[in-house]
Image 1 (cartoon, rainbow, N blue to C red):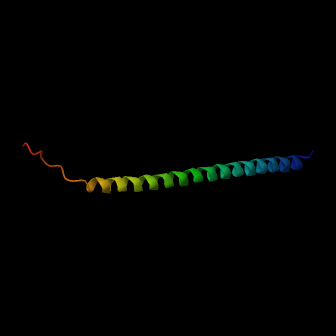
Image 2: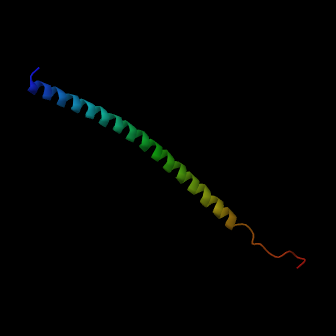
Image 3: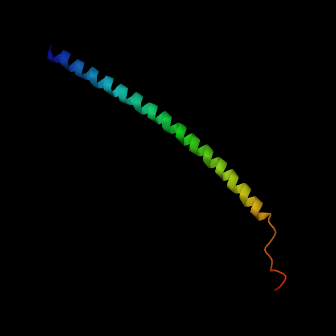
Length: 69
């Protein structure tokens, strides 16, 4: 094999490896984005629930002194 052919082959191997790495990183990024979206949805639901509970606690009657004071 000539030196030029060897260099081209080596470059093709590097490009193929980089393409595979990019594909793997893209897949991982897509999975992480799904997790972020799920976490965001859970946070939104928890925020709604917290605000609802907070509103309910504000509607409770005020704490007063017992009649024997």
